[in-house]
Image 1 (cartoon, rainbow, N blue to C red):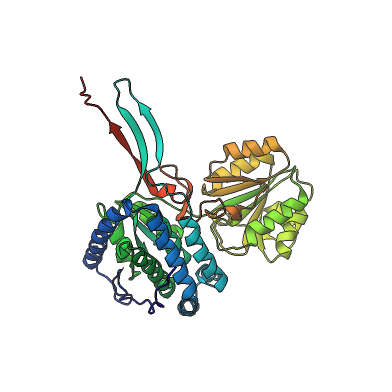
Image 2 (cartoon, rainbow, N blue to C red):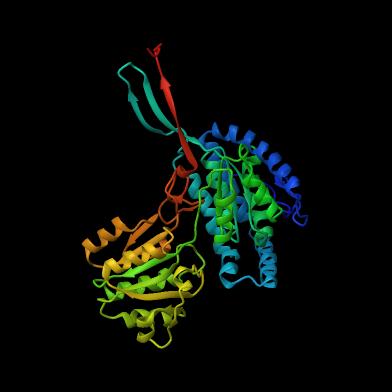
Length: 443
């Protein structure tokens, strides 16, 4: 593969980016910006919808190579973002999401290549039928069109979202948070280089540089220009998008995830899984935020100590506090808090019934897990917990599109329509009916 010359540092005036990073937008200016980007995206989407699989895959492989070649440039840009984040007092969890390392850049590039290697959903035939009158019917997958992605903190979303959109035949308009402005610019530049190298329109992935609220508002009003919005961020962002959008929304809500240790759990397995589920990476949406322990579990104090000894602060109910003096009392708000940090709530419940009731009351329909050797209890948990991902004897940190074999994800949908759980290539398509006749007229 021929790699283009090293990219110039991505700045606010980079081609196929819209707006000035340091210039706030009026609502009218934001509407004009989105109208311009939307028109370009629509033209690009028309071409992408017909692009062969090999050409789309080539664009992603070129982009992956560009990311690897520009590792030093990307690390320098990320260093600027991290310095600005520290000045602004961003939390440890947000700084962890923002930070890039050589390993994370390599993983990002590998993610692009894994998406390129996935089966192309566009044109896949879902089902066929022949009516008694001879009409031959088929349903085939087609792209959604133009996807708007609004996200915060994580630069890797720029790569994942752009790659998935392109491979599924869609154009993307990306609006990342200001905290990752320099990093996002470099990653976006690599995607643009990949598109150009493969002979696809560079405007297939566009980036909105201004990160003020006006740009978001214009995207929410962009019915007819944007076909679907995907918000990835905190509760306030997702709530605003859901409340104000005139465009369909594929929501990625907070990960109020629970791990329930059943009375029949293996203690060694339980301790390993709980520490991993909470602490492997505290800033990811799949991290466990509440630990529920069956009152019938024989060694609850050991489980609590395992988390505390690993550096996790625990906020618990009265029974949990009594088991270890290092546990502090939980408030009502704690049971509904996505910490994204080394903090966890812990409570004891009456068996499976108690766990199900607690998850129904406090869960966000993201990811919940049971740890048990009782297959009947596990199957009931899997059937009755109404979450996008439900697990048995596994860490909730597996709530990730790549880990579930999807290559990458644009987000984890906690809703019930169109797509649920990790949204990857298939989730970024819809379908149309093809009807082939031989002259039939309806009587």
